[in-house]
Each structure stands twice: as structure tokens, then as C-alpha cells.
Image (cartoon, rainbow, N blue to C red):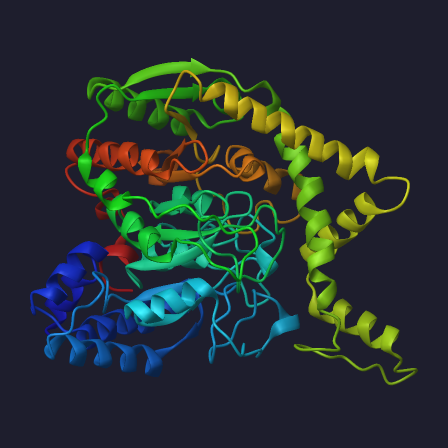
Length: 506
């Protein structure tokens, strides 16, 4: 394969790459090697990957090529490479959750969704960088250094899944897996010009995800097109008996919905509490323009109110750290991962104290302390209990808002990507980046973010759509239609407007 061919093929969608494989125009080994070469060329600069899985990825690709040559019926995405967020366990590959406390840990089993990827024949390129234990909105809390935004390497790629979003946006991978606890798929998508989907809670197995907040965490697709997200979503969704919260619903026809490109009669609700004050004017402008495109295509725009969304951020930052403080108790230096043994008095308690002190970063420690306090005797009802009541009110707001509309809409993030280090010493300012995405996690509803255009400093902004639980197909219907409308107006994908790192050499 020539350099020009390699340059072109990695910039196509995963669906186009799958079609080229099926037609025999390229082999999976060539396609996988092209992406590995791209990682070699640019990732020292971006730090999107914590581990690159070269040999296994190429071995999987060769196996797929052999099976295809033998006439075997394969999955539609077989041979298309993928990257996996480092909070998802992978047998035989390091899984660190971006933390020193798990440095070098190699899991003895695969997460259920990883097993689905392997069975379908997708070469796993490696594990992507993330905020430590998914705690952050910028991928700056990773123990292994921050990931940089490929649009501007002085800016953040979002968080906690900035590595997956940056890898897809920089053409290092056509597909990636992310996880979304308060917006960690959708917010990175918005600031990197990619597509991110948070599925309905329980529709994709959480077995094998290193838990931060069990009632909020959800794995989902990170891609460059809505159709690609739909195809990946169909692959990883489905009931899993290993996950007690797994839904038994049949997997929806997401790809067909994405391809329909029809929004005539679709009712889109604009959430009054998630626009205006606090949202950058250019982000708001791109949001308004996107709504106008939908309205011209036959959608009906309706204004709705969700009054309790204003309390969602506060409730989330009590529920999430409370669950995290419990889930992270297992990292104690006794069973696996890092162990620090103090020279004096190496008792079990002192080993735990030394290990957790050395292994956890500041943001993780902050949230453990906050969560432990919220769950402590005398404060449980006042803090954690009250937050759960607010959660119920948010769910009721969603139920009422969906009565007159099919989907809800808001900007995904209130601003474009901010500069590295800009908010690292101001946790409250950092937490505000999730103000629009958190309600969906509290309610378990699905959400999608797609690019809405360029805002300040030529950086991408995103528009978010939310649907009722189990109605993920609606997201792909509206997302696929708007993507096509916007790309027609832009003269091609938004990523084509990206700077040299994205579209040329390093």
C-alpha cells in the first residue's frame, strides 16, 4: 500500500473501511498496519494511547484475512481496528485506569464488550489514556500525563475519555470504546469534533469495567460518524448474565436509523435550563444553527423546561464520589496492583495507607474523601440521601419533558476545549464542564453528541440529543440526519477543516 493510499484509507469512516475489506480492496493487515503507523507518527505528541497492542492486533488482522479468503461469513466490522479505553479490562493487555495503583496490571479475563469485539474479529490497537479512574473532565488527571487535543495541542481533549476521542479524531483509530459516567464520552466528542454515544443504562454490559460509580457508568461508542457509532453500538449491546443491571431488550436497528436521514415530523425539545447563561456565545450560535437546519428539514422545535436540572450537578457530585469511595476500597495493596511497604511498622493498615497514598492522585483522593464524608453516620441523609431525592426529581423532569417531544437537545459542553492547566487548580470550574451531560447519567437515559460546527479559535463545538430510556434509535435518526445536513453546508466532514496534525504529517 502506498503512502498516499494509507493517508486516504485511515481518513475514511469505519463503514467505508469495512466495505473496502469486504470488496477485497485492502486487507485487514494492511488497514491495521496503517493505523499502527499513524500511531507511531503522531502519538508521542498526543499521548492518546497508554499501551499499543501491535503484535496481537496484527495477528487478529491476519486471522480475519485468512477467514475471509476461505469464504467464511464474517461480522460486518471484521478486520476494522479499534481502540479501547483503559478502564475496560483486556486479557493479556495492561489495564491501569490511568492510575499508578494499577501500573503494570494485566487482567486474567476480558470485559464482556471486549469479548464481543474479539469474537467479531476487530483488531484491538491498544488502550487509550484517561483521567485517573475516570475522575476528570480533561484527561489531565491521568498518572501517565495528559492527552492533547489534535485540533490544538495546547488544549485538552475532554475527559475522562480524552484518549479515545483524540485517537479517533487524529485518525489513529476509526473506532474506539469509551465510558460515560457524567459525560465522559459525549463531552470529549464535542471538543474533538467526533461522535460520542452514551447508550441507555444497562443496554451495554458493565462486566469488566473498572467501576467508578456503578449506578452511573456506561460504556459506549466513540467514532467519526453517526453510522459508525450505530454499527459499533449494535455489536457491543445485548443482555449479559454476568451483569445484574443488564437489560434483556433486543438490540435496536441503530444503523438503519442512522441511515434514514429523515426527521420530518420529529419533535425536538430545547431544554431551557441548558442554554444561554454560562454557555459560550459561539457554542450557543452553532447550537441554534443546528436547530434551524433540523427545522428546515421538517422537524418541529419545541421549548421545554426541566427545572430540577439546575440541581443535577450538585447531586451528581455527591452520588458519584459516594459510590467511588466504596468501589475504590478494593485497591488496598493486598490483592493486586501496587503495594508500598513502609520500612517501619509494616502492618496491614500501614501498607494500605502507604499504597493508597502513593498510588492515588489528588483528584481521586479528593473524591474518596468527599464520598466517605457523604456516606458517614450523621451525614448520610443530609447529603447522599438528599442527592438521591434530587435524582428522582431529575428523572421526573425527563418523563415530563418527553411527553410532548421525541428527543431533547442542548449544547454538549458549555465551552470549546480549554487550555491545558487552565482549570486544573479549580475543581468547581472543571466540574461545570459536565453541566449539560450529567442529567442523562442520573436518569439512565441515552445521549449522543455530534459536531455542530466551529466556534471560538476555530475549535469544534457539539450538539447533544437525549432520548427516553430504551429509545436509542431516536438518537441515531436525528443524529444521522443532522450530520448529513451540516456536512452539506460545510462541504464535507468537520474534521476536514482540522489543522495539519489531523490531516497531514506530524
